[in-house]
Length: 92
Image (cartoon, rainbow, N blue to C red; front, side):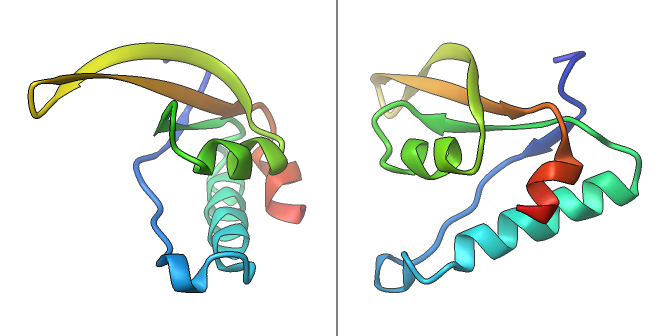
């Protein structure tokens, strides 16, 4: 995507450790590093039915793309959440 320069491939937090701010800290650190490298935009792809969609939206991510993928013979929908200012995310 020519608009979004940074791309987070995956972030996973054990369910027993979710809700403790670990994911937010990881996202902030990633965004801050991108910003320091001069990369001001980023996105992350997530399965549309994944509860993490709410997490990314709460961090200010906007759904900007959607695509269908096949995995294990099943058709799945992925959504890309995008941020236009990694500096803001890094400070949130």
